[in-house]
Image (cartoon, rainbow, N blue to C red; front, side):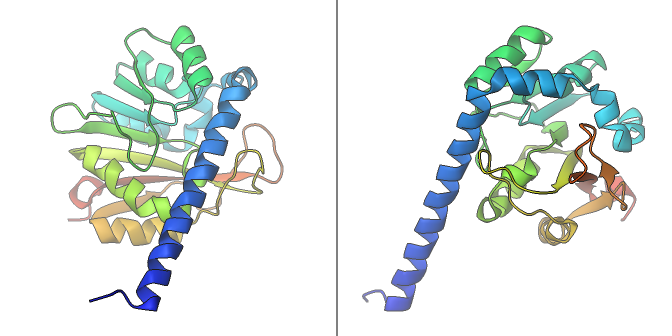
Amino acid sequence: MPSSPSNINSHSSSESAHSCSAATTEQTVTHYHLHAERYQAQYDSIAAADVHADWKDLLDELSVGSALDVGAGSGRDAQWLADLGWEVTAVEPASKLREIAQNHTHAAIKWVDARLPDLVGVNAPGDGFDLILLSAIWMHVPQNYRPASFKRILDLLSPSGTVIITLRFGPSDPERPMYPVSLDELIVLAAKYGVSLVEFNTQHSSDKLQRADVTWTTVALARAVELGNE
């Protein structure tokens, strides 16, 4: 049976949205590649422990194991986790930024060239990663990529693992497009895939780079039993 006009239009719209998302993602990756030195200096100007102070108490409670840092940038957070004893895999698609990070971080960190939603080439150890960090990355993921990205992250997570996502609230940057984020969106995705969610700072934290129009909140995701919600 031939496709109806509505099905054809729906398929065409889906393909168009995917192409647009792929183009803007590539634009963002290229921007970070071309300005790698600037971003490396910017990110490394603030200690990872300060950036992640909102969930540091949770980190202290976790047993050290395998960690995945998605959108690892300068390697600041990957290095921090490695110094704490974690076995770290760092994912960064911007080649120049990844090269700089590799040259400035612990040799034991495994670096992978990959991006959401597929994270091709990222292989979870054993039962999965015990900790997955998405710091300052979710706003770069187009909305139509987010369900698949969320599922892929959970597929890589161990049964007792924890996911940390930081959400950026503030204006976009035309050179590295950012999309609106919300706690409600993550609540819906968490419910769909059967994980529990905890927000650490409901009032939002100020920006560590002192940008007055940017604030952050941090969310932890885990299997329901792990967050005490059996």
